[in-house]
Image (cartoon, rainbow, N blue to C red; front, side):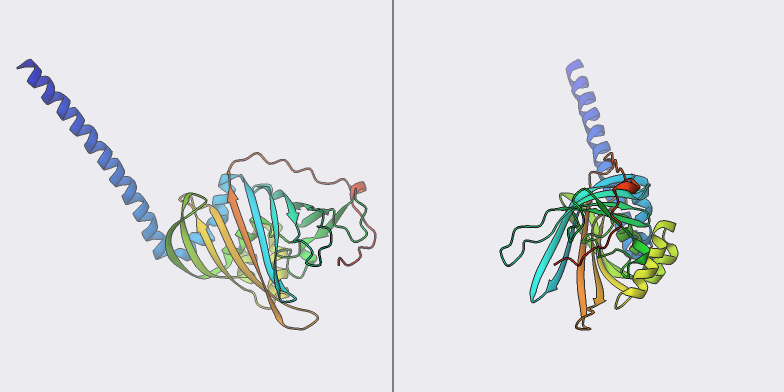
Length: 279
């Protein structure tokens, strides 16, 4: 009798445990479903809030890729590094594609990203090897969205503040992480109005300098609303042929919370001489 009572009690505990697990699983599933429904209902708002999620995350590691067609060949410039979203400071090592003529490969360019400025080392074209080149991003017709061969990760995110149209495509995975996939178009002029002070001037310049202020994109946000992958297409007018060229920029963000240390060059380390055109 006592054994039968114990078995009954054990069975009741086990059943209760399984019920709690099922409820927890169900609640989690319902939570994800609720977020999916919200994303489908108002994808524009979800995308406009993505920069705030990065600020909350603080920092991350980053990979970038910039693709464009030139001379009938599609080339890709790749970058890798880390970024501090709150201070808007980052460092990337940018690798140029191999010369199709078989010439020696380019030395990787080290880029420091800072509010309103881009610093480049190993720029070549007459710049001493121990010097940095400093460029004010607001003076560039593209706001440095493509000039440096890598889009500043937070500037790329701030473009989403200008989202005008978007659709929720559905759930997928990026590098093993569950994400929500959105597709839409952002307006650079609108993004500039909502951007941080550091990015406002650069995005305003880009809105005027590109062939169109519209930026088609695919964005992949995790369950915390953070960008995991962002692919954007920028269009500019080729000065020589006056035709429109499309540049596709992809930013991958991962390892959120990674400590990031960026030391900006001293004034004495910045090259102020004439910069020859790179070949």
